[in-house]
Amino acid sequence: MNKILGEVPDQVGYIYIYDMLGHNINALAFADDLVLIAATREGAQRSLDRVVAALLEFGLELAPAKCAAFSLVPSGKTKKMKVLSDSQFTAGGCAVPQLGVLQAVRYIEVLFTEIGPAVRKVELLSLLDRITRALLKPQQRLKILKTYLIPRFIHSLVLGRASYGLLRKLDRQVRAVVRRWLRLPDNIPIYKAFFLSSIAQGGLGISSYETSVPRVTLARFERLSTSQYEAANVVGASAWAVKRRRWCGLSRRRDGSWSVELYNIVDGFELRAAGIVPASTQ
Image (cartoon, rainbow, N blue to C red; front, side, top):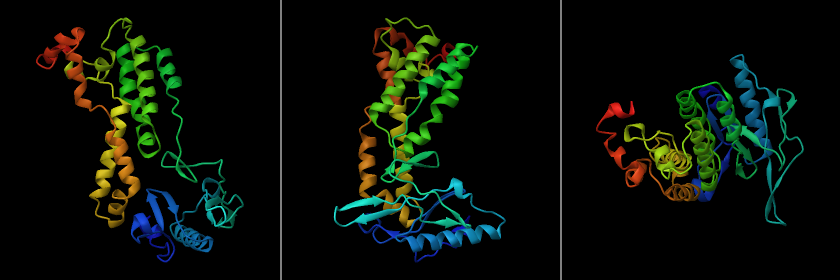
């Protein structure tokens, strides 16, 4: 991929003066997922031709049906961006599908439209129902939930668009199902703190989307700011990044605070000794 990326013309790319401070961006890559960026149709086609030729040297080829193109053209009269829906590019003699305003493309498990990451629907209830209907012990269901199901959506929620309302909704769905799995009585007032406190602190140790997604998002921005690549540093300090960091800062909770709330409630008072006696939560 380094060899193939090296074939992308340096003169072709896009310069966003206000945020990128003159840095020319002509490609984005993650493993074999590749995005080519150009300011003109001719430049984009030139980059595409060079990449196709470089792939052939390694016995590889693009699958045009799995490729997609967005073409944004400024409209001076309306002072808006138009999205071209007619085919603009070819790869290996085949037309590359052109996406319109009602379509999206999936890139590293995040859906993108012409205005950026799209809000992706997270169908959690149906997956929770499958675990509920499986002939499993409560401990096995919790293991599947914590190890596989909850982490399954972290990536798309961090890199895509998510609201705190959505994250809280997902957390409530998880707690409601776990309450049924463990047959907890409805009059127990310690649900949230009990679910989210660590096992060593007397809780169930279930991750919360409301706290984990902002934390992971913020960690990604920190790595951008300390990257060895100057362009990544610029992105980490851009107006968009500042806005996203501010969103992360709106998180009302930090993972370590749930045990304090748990112990301050009458039903959770005696769980303060859980950390002193590890066998009690084994």
